[in-house]
Image (cartoon, rainbow, N blue to C red):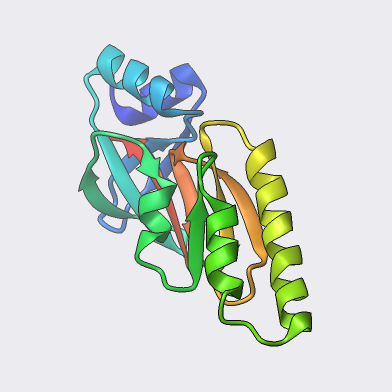
Length: 159
C-alpha cells in the first residue's frame, strides 16, 4: 500500500512536502505513530511549515516525541516550570535585592499565580512563562507530536 491508500484506510490526513512527497499526518499521539509505523513499515519524520504556506519541509527521521522543555530551553524570552519546580526559592532570590515595596508585592503576586498553576498541573505537563513579565503563557504537555513556535508549525508524520 502506498501513503495515500494507508491514509485513506486509516482515516489520516496527508500533507505534501516541498519536494512533492506525501506524508501521513493527523495522528493523535506518539503511541499511535509507533503503532502505525510498525504496522505499515513507515518511518516517523519531523515536518516544519511556515505560517501561511501549504507545503512542509521534511526535517528527517525522529525517534521520540517533541520535548517542550527542550523547545523553549534556549529561548531567553520564556521559562519552563515543572511540577517539582522550586518557585518559592526563585521568589526569594528575585526579591532579595528589591527596595521598592510595590515591586516586591507585584513580583510576589506573579510568582503566587505561577505557583498556583504549577500545583494544579499534571505530572506530564509544564508551564510556559514569559521571563520578563512573569506572565503565564500556557500549560503544555511535556511531550507532544505537534506544536507552534513563532511563525513555524512543527509536527511528526510518517513516510
